[in-house]
Length: 245
Ligand code: UDP
Image 1: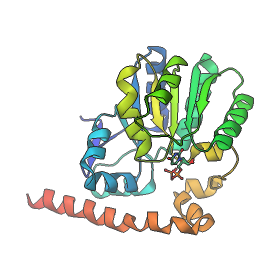
Image 2: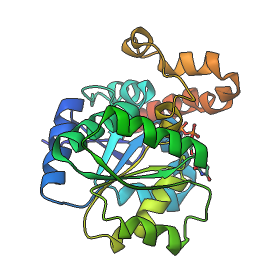
Image 3: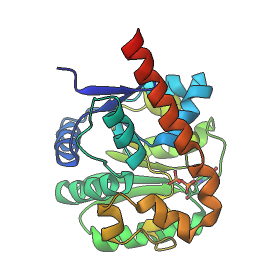
């Protein structure tokens, strides 16, 4: 049985969060280069209209379902995914693995003061991991100088917080030059690590309502939510085509 679920041409991995972490921990141990994307409906919809970005997603080793909408879409297609795996939770679990294994971690992205604060907090919470470097996220993604800095640091893990689609593009462009490393786009996670942005309380997350909490806190995000019905509609259309075809 395939361990992928195809939603609008994006191949999601069908693992639980615990299985995902086990898999990534073993890849880290074996120094297997890995490109992870955590995708939500907004990312899937963006890939529908940008073929370059779709090709970037195809280059990923794992696409993780980050968002209640993805879980709903999979259910609608009768190809359920076990659970939502929030990008931020995966980031925290990977930091915990890095802490146990004394790994090198690079933080790339966000504003200079934000990434610096995030690094300070990470060092405090995970004293055994080694922050081998960090860099703010305001540069051209094709810039080789920044990629060189990351490469010289010899990271085992690279968290790229440039927001999508920039972070995935950066990974796709520079990935071939690295001989090891697990690379993951983490959106606004450094802002949370730095304590600048608060995550939804656990009960909201358990009820799959993190999106609503973020919308209440940052009403300007409504534009980003507006595509969710469109996403569901498109998934529904694919399902109908499948049944009729
Ligand atoms: N960012 C960056 N460089 C850019 C654009 C954005 O480093 O050119 C950072 C920004 O400072 C923020 C993150 O990328 O920390 C994007 O966060 P956003 O909330 O858009 O991501 P989400 O988690 O919603 O995908």
